[in-house]
Length: 386
Ligand SMILES: [Zn+2]
Image 1 (tube, rainbow, N blue to C red):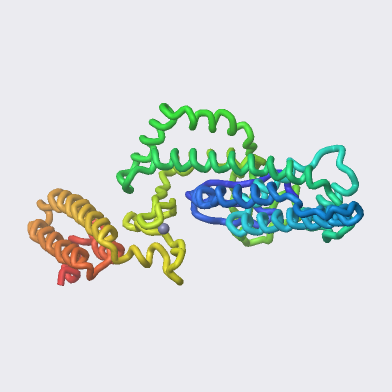
Image 2: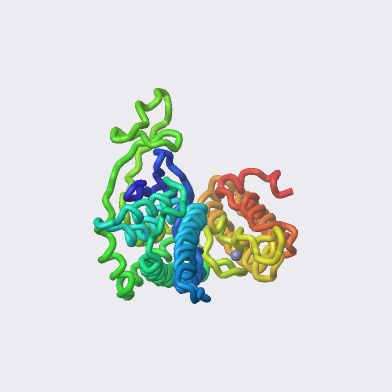
């Protein structure tokens, strides 16, 4: 198991280097969205429940009681192990980073230099290198103490999650806005928010840069086993950050999201953060509980809210395109005497399309595809106005 993690955030992408030297690529901001989605409250509850388990209704006869106690301890050890495996499976499904870094933090709480043989065997069970058997008798007091530490880790993660949501709320604002808006709000956050400063000051030093070449999502590292690069293939070079700190990676990605002005938005239905596909997407792709096969997006597509956003964005785009086309027409009116008349036709054409958006007969994306063109192109072809 690696003791650290490597992630690269370039070209508005997130590259995660995995154990087997493969590189997983997603849009920048994916990790933030996934981290925010984890229900740490539910994890805390589950863990607390297991920690508080007590043996009850013991027999009054001493040899029977002893047997019962032993039986319970064995079963308890088994329940804790299956909780641990369940947790790992649940976390790794969401994001590899989540599993490795959280698992490591939790595991570190249990290991120490003076472990007994039985404890080492139990560790093997947790790591999946050996089967659980009745001969492994680990102290339930020790397990419960450990579960207590795990709860503390989850509480801490829950706190980080809350802080992160608060940072994002401050920089992302209500709408996509203009370029530079996110950076301006980010500058204000840096200046004003002491929590943000604590995050940065306590965690950045945990990041250490590496440089890797990759080809077809496979890392070619001289320290690795990947072997020579196949000839004639496209190579990519990226700076990766290696760390064992989940918080360090989180704050770094937050900074990169702001620096590259990647817009993340809260879903208008479930209120959770997601990566919008275009300026008008207000709803995420998460399945809605209790509505078989439906996502927030399915439910939100026909909503008044979505229609209003599409209409407003289409109007904004209409004005933008008209302005730049008009300016271009004025610049060329000496050479092309009929160009202002042609501009009027462009304007009418746009108005017609806009009306279709307002009636709900055309999506914002279709409108954008038809109308968001360079002035030269719009003014040249009279055919498109028919
Ligand atoms: Zn949603």
